[in-house]
Image (cartoon, rainbow, N blue to C red; front, side, top):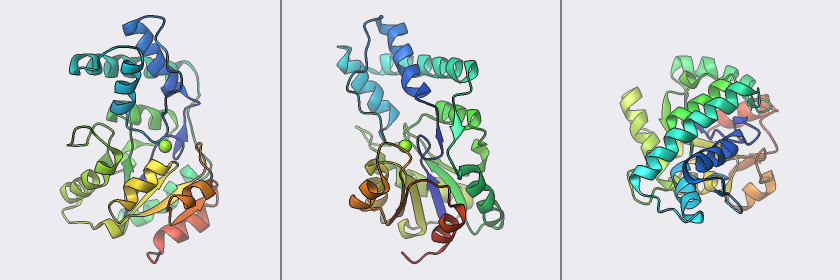
Length: 236
Ligand SMILES: [Mg+2]
């Protein structure tokens, strides 16, 4: 069994430090008028967010500009997360991970990440929230889609490949549970026959996430006992 966690608004919050670091990067590289009005961030891949952000500001998102933005965003995020303790694990997260540890140690459960973040910024956010990225043996990042344009729906297949590389055996979609806070998390799971747990700690309620097809949804991960029981029970 593989459990894949989304990062932002599922495992942790950075109190929008990530969004503001992107705005910082845009202003550094493209001037003070750079703005992010009406941008949609929730559940989207960072490469898509950045490309949209550049277009919104009249900048063609070519490879060099995308790379420069990614680099500057990483630096600005580092500055923001170092300057103030804005990042924290969401309720229940640290305890749930601890409870899953013994199962992970026996190999009964593998823990992973499926996120729109880049690896360097995703790991930085996790560390800032006191979650060790090394806990997660299978990681699918926002820049890992092999397709153009990239989409979150491509990432479960990336996670399946990583699982084979790391653990030496195949895993089927039905043996994967994705935990996330947006309809994008739900749809990427359903596209691969994965089970999905919606968590209402982002901009969508548990009811919203059930409404788009989550198999189960909770207001937060705080009731760790019930959530662990649901995760380990493989009947849907
Ligand atoms: Mg999220």
